[in-house]
Image 1 (tube, helix red, strand yellow):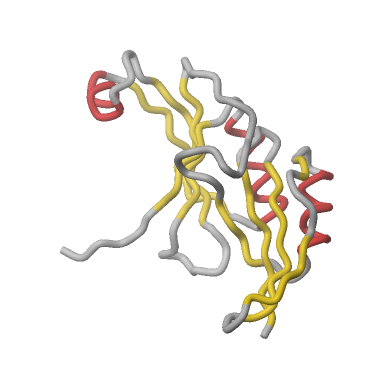
Image 2 (cartoon, one colour):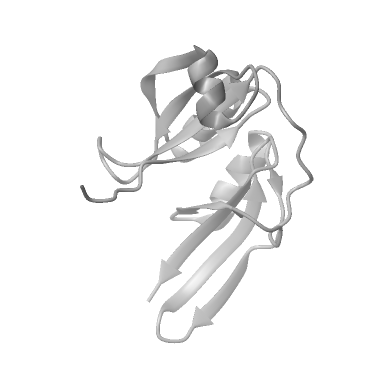
Length: 150
């Protein structure tokens, strides 16, 4: 059996609101059905005592009907997380290639997200010109916006 990337998961304080953000800002598409799962099997698999969650998968843009998804779940009982930081150990961010970094950053801000860094343009030798910035969704999950030009 070959290996294939399938999804990235975000644990959300309000899964319906966060789903709406990714649909409105990045044109992600819902992949029904919505999940409402609990039970001993879920507790065993996740290592979370009395695990119960709700949420949905969103198809990420640019990859068609079989492309990877962003899985946004909300557990009944959740742990708190620290403020977002680009240099925190572990998974850092998700990235979207966009036509206009400033315009999408404006959309993130309009939909309740926040700017983390400045919009920067830099020539990367042998690769091209990148314009990028880091932002965060309304729950503080880091997002890189990037545009590459030759």
